[in-house]
Amino acid sequence: MKQKMILLMGGQGVGKGTHARALVERDGYGYIETGAILRALPAESKLAKIIARGELVPDADLFDVIADAISKTSGNIIVDGFPRTIGQAQWIVKNYADKFDIRVIYLNVPQDIMLARIQKRIREGGGRADDADDAIVRRRLDNFFKTTMPAIEWLRTADGVRFSDVDVCDEDFNVNFMRVSNAIA
Ligand code: AMP
Image 1: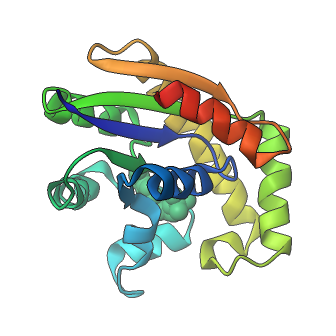
Image 2: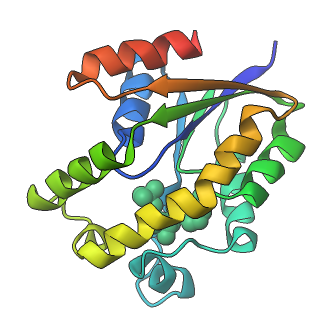
């Protein structure tokens, strides 16, 4: 049987990281947190400057990073924050659908709730440099609708992928987590 590769997708503030960590803790999956890997790059690097502006890192700069992270895991894995473009979505399906049972979990939250959650995160000072500036946060939200939504729509019907659209709008995290768990089971 193939190992599972769970691609957790959704906009800012929908709970990708929180759901991923809860699944990792419960099921012991390998965890690839794309944003954290990228934010750990030296501040003077080309990619760090792109991230600080709230822009997406070019696909070509990311593929080696993701392939390397995947090669270091064993068993089932959760990928948080990748893919975010159609090119990335096509790359992961082309290169990994034969080795993994790819499941996309789209954490679906309307834009107004997404914005409210991000603003709460900013107020509570999560400490992320790229969360500190409202314009940058909005740029990341724009990226999501312009660039990542088409990738989600492509994956919805892609061969070799099982796609679940999960409503995670409940106030209670446990309710949302139950829905995500059911989609993965
Ligand atoms: P995140 O923590 O997932 O919000 O990611 C932080 C930043 O890293 C994003 O705003 C992008 O600049 C960059 N990043 C993360 N994942 C990707 C991706 N799949 N493609 C391009 N850039 C990414």
